[in-house]
Length: 343
Ligand code: OKP
Ligand code: ZN
Image (cartoon, rainbow, N blue to C red; front, side, top):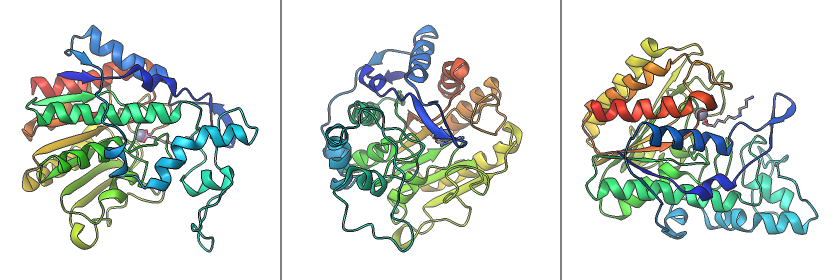
């Protein structure tokens, strides 16, 4: 399987995150991608390619102009306001407050275009997020051009980012951008299966009213886990998209055996929908030793996950999302990809 990766993605290097009422060491850090890249090389998964530059058009097909312009101009505004460290939002236009007009002040903009205070922004965040989106599109293009599968080693991740907000360590929604790019380049039906431990709220929200992109997500129950406010089983789409979103919230402590029925259910929906391409939002944070998650996958189980996904026999783009057990991340990720290839 071919891998796509850009070193520019390493330039987003947050130091801290707000978590558990403290400023803690960031977990979504460059070494995550480095560990996966090392495993891809060491286990000879296949050749590694730099992404092509698709420009900002495919990004703007998914994200609002206001949001893209905000991210692009953020560091200039931030430093012009006299700040030098990484940024966190702290005020949001919740119920009874107005999202429009969009504020001028950078602190207002940070709140208007975000969903949480756990996602640091720095001087290289925009460049890294752009490279991550290009990585996703390049992997999608490989599959559209005839590869049976491809791996986009994306970082920062994307699935929490909505049309006009960042959060959950995500800035541009790589999977959504790749799916939209495939649609814009002639494919009629694309499916996204999100196996990250956390619900892919951004991806779901982007396609909630549409039937041309099926969104399936298996994740920790939002009653107990981030992102808390989306990912329940009764969310199945709206209007033209009714029935084209499916969620499998599972309890904390779920192991591979308990996960399997949900995955098999999701695979049945894939077979019914018959997408021309499947995009897998590949989080590795269902791992038992993940520092911020509560499922119980072993490293071996990730082989079985890849194997299961291959049964659908659909051209498949894997895009990396979360996974924070740094030491095991490369092993777990390549286990999925090898499991898929060996079927
Ligand atoms: C991103 B992805 C833990 C704070 C967790 C957000 C988690 C984002 C996960 N104390 N904050 O889906 O892996
Ligand atoms: Zn996650």
